[in-house]
Length: 503
Image 1 (cartoon, rainbow, N blue to C red):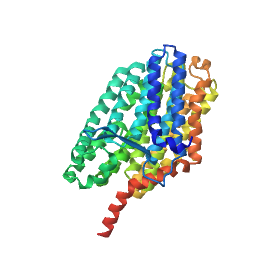
Image 2: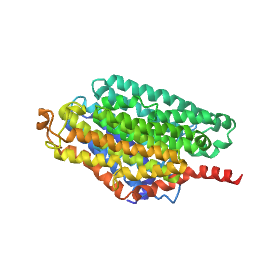
Image 3: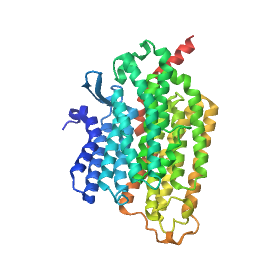
Image 4: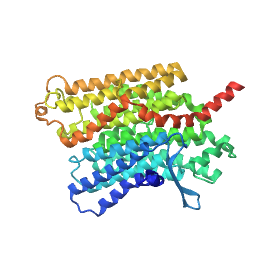
C-alpha cells in the first residue's frame, strides 16, 4: 500500500488504537495473562503506527502534517482538526514508545485488578496522544481533561499507602488550574467564532478587545501549563503523586504528562500571545531558574529515591521553561530536546526504582548499599541511565542542556550562569544517590539475596538506554524536524525585534 494513501488518517489511527485496545479488554474474560498480552500488542501496534509519522515527515512542505479537519459539531463551531509539526511529532512518538515499556514493567508488579489497570493505561495513552495532535482548542481541552481521570485512578487505586491523598491533590491542582484555560478558550471563541488554533492565530491580533484582554488570556493558559509542568512554586503536588503512583504511572507522569505543560507554553502561549510572552518572559525565566536550583537542592537531601527523582524533574523542566522563554533558536531547540531526553531518562529511572521496590518494598536510600555485588546488571543499567540524566556528552542529556544554556546566555548572561549551576547540582545528587545505593558493603543482609534484572525488566529498561545513546550520538535525527517548527514559532518575535530596531 502507498503510505500516502492512508496518511490523512494515520493520526486518527495512532490516537485511537490504544482506546480500541481498552475497549477490547473490557469484553475479555478476567485472565490476567491474556489481558497483559493484548495490552502489549495494542501498545506495540500504536508505537509501530506512530513510526510512520517521522519516517514520512517532510518538514519543508507545510507547517502541519498528516492534517485532517472535519466538522464535529456545527454549533458551536467545533472541528475534529488534528495535525503534527516538528514540536508535537516527537512527543507523540515518545508517548507511544514509553507505553509498551509501562506494560512490560507492570507485567508482574500489578497483581490485583489487572484488567482495570491496563484499561486505564491504554485510555491514558489515547488521551495523551490527543493532546499533542489536536489543532482545535475544544478538542485540545477535551483531551487535556481526559488525561486527568485515568492518571488519578492509576494513582488512587493502584498506588501506595497515601495514594488517595496524592490522587486527590493531583486532580484538584490540575483541574482548578485548567478552569482558567477554559475561560480563556471560551473568550477566544466568543470573539472569533471558532475553536480552530490556526484560524485564531491568524486573526487574534485584529480581534476587538484583544489588546485589553491579551494579558489575562495569556495568564489563563499559562497557569494551567505552569501547574502541569510543574513550574515553581506550583510543584508541590508532584512529589506526592510520584511517590504514591505505581511504577507505570510515574513513568508516564514524568515522561509525558509533565511535557503537556511545556508543550502548551510552546504551542499556545508563544503561538497565540507573542507580545504577552515577551512582556512576561523576565519573571517566568526567574521562576524557571528558581525551579532549577531549588529542585536540585531539595533533591540532594531526599532520603527517598522516588522523591529524589521527582524533584530532579522540577529542576530539569525548569531548563525547558528557561529555553522556551529565551526566544532563541538554540533555546527552543534545546527545550524540545530536553523534553524528549528527560522523558526517556527519567522514565527509565522510575522503572529502575520500581524494580528495586518490587524486591524490597521500600524506596528509602538508607535501606540499600553495596547492591552492585548481588545485582551487577541492574547496577550497570542504573549507572548508564544516571550518566544520561546528568548530561554526559554523547548521551541524550547533553545536547539539550547545552542548547538551552546557549539560548539563555543569548537572552541574558546571568540566566545562563545560574542555569549552569543546575547541571552541576544534578550530577551531585544523582551520583551521590548512586554511590549510596550501589557502592560499599551490603548494609542489609536481605539485600544479598536480591535477584538481578529479569528478562521482562531488561526489555522495559534497555530500550531507554538505547534511545539515550542514539539521541546523544545523532541528535540531528530529531532536530531536523524540530528546527523548522521552532523557526515558525519564533517568526513573530523576529518581526517584533525588527520593528524595534527600525524605530
